[in-house]
Amino acid sequence: MSLLAVDVSQNGSIKNVDSSRSVVEMEEFDFSRLPDRLRTLNMERQRSFDERSLAEIPIGLSPHPPSRADNFNRVLDHLDSIFSPGRRSGFNTPSSNFVYEPHPMTAEAWETLRRSLVYFRGRPVGTIAALDSSEEKLNYDQVFVRDFVPSALAFLMNGEPEIVKNFILKTLRLQSWEKKIDRFQLGEGVMPASFKVLHDPARNTETLIADFGESAIGRVAPVDSGFWWIILLRAYTKSTGDSSLAEMHECQKGMRLILSLCLSEGFDTFPTLLCADGCCMIDRRMGVYGYPIEIQALFFMALRCALVLLKQDTQGKEFIERIIKRLHALSYHMRNYFWLDLKQLNDIYRYKTEEYSHTAVNKFNVMPDSLPEWVFDFMPIHGGYFIGNVGPSKMDFRWFCLGNCIAILSSLATPEQATAIMDLIESRWEELVGDMPLKVCYPAIENHEWRIVTGCDPKNTRWSYHNGGSWPVLLWLLTAACIKTGRPQIARRAIELAEARLSKDGWPEYYDGKLGRYIGKQARRYQTWSISGYLVAKMMLEDPSHLGMVAHEEDKQLKPVLKRSSSWTF
Ligand code: GLC
Figure (cartoon, rainbow, N blue to C red):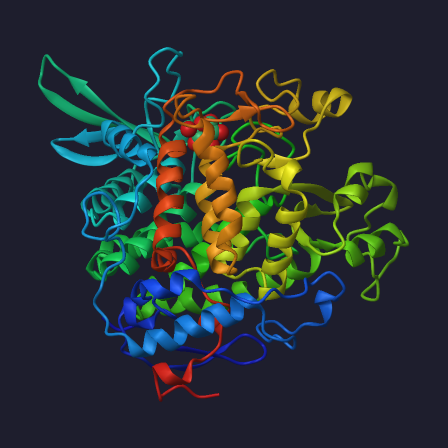
């Protein structure tokens, strides 16, 4: 297949379009070729980014000394050119030859994961959300797109790509359904939040039903599903080396439909995506409406994935051009306005308000009085993070785990920012990890604020569920981020904590309490993504080459890479 090699001029336009590289070849370094001995790479610790102003950093250029992650990536890059291609990642799990001492929990986890498989007409097409028969099912008997991602990664790492391919194709078919809520028709590209196989024993038939938000609590469409779908397609392609799935006409079209939804022109003044509350992992009202970090980070990552997956045909080219422009604008916006460290916090604390015109420093007219008390104590000297939301007169300072980890993996975070996020996690270990990894967000909202923000949601009381609850599934994202930043010891500590309880407690969906010490009030047991999240974390730590499936190097697609092709122009 022919793909587009891009050279971006300063205003973001493509100057040269020329390459005949395949999807896999086009990718940056290939972690799958990393030898075992590199697992113990011990990178020197770097100073965090806390005292630097991001506004001074040109996009894609780092004027700072190389971070440990830079070094790590450079080594990987070097190895990429030395080791022969062709080896798949995923040979270190129970069905493989790679020998390591498995934790007794991994066997149980694999067994339970396999029991959660959902079949459609004899083929595995996904995994059920939870295998808990003691609680009311609600929609936990469905295959959720976001929940399937860690399951898919576990199967890919284990050299079992078939189920992932089936899932990608099945959900693609569902995308083409006509989607309606009452009399209103949803966008063509919307991917389902979840689907279910219906068996009719009388007729001996099986049919699928899907939920695009029309049955979901709150009736919100899952903005994250389409992004996860694209991310998974790239993970499949990267892991198997098989680009034929991504090249299929249907997959190309599916991708373009998803992209059309989020790249369309409108009234936006920001490159970020405007969303309703409850449109992502946090699928209930939790005050994340506006520009939630989770969606912005997934959006960025999906754009980067699409950039290498889209074909260079007439339609593909047009999208690639739009993607590149958006990536530039989005990374600029996020790195400048969502980033918070000690210096930035101090600047906001001293902000003037009611400024007008282009010279305004306080661009969104944020009132310093709206700064919550907790953030002053929470902010370490070394460290920083992408805050939850930024909009007109609005900054949600809460820490959200998923968005920050995805920012690291997709390289939305600069290497310095990625290091700073890891520094923050280390310095605020008790708050963010506590007894059970990992807080979905921090801190919890309570009392009057909880009433106003959640609409008195009894499931989202303080330190429970989405409101400061601890979600074991997030372990895989933390582990991936740790490996990418060259700090696997942080992941090891978190995994040990999970191993002390997860299996004994029956793999709960989430934990409650400030430290995450209690099994969640309404948590399902045998929650599949708690199980697969653990497996993925373990496998990645054992074989960091798996990281390549879900990680991107800094802005490589936006910068020409000389060694890949001699036909790029500058
Ligand atoms: C809950 C979670 C959501 C997840 C679903 C199925 O609603 O908030 O993120 O997809 O359960 O596990």
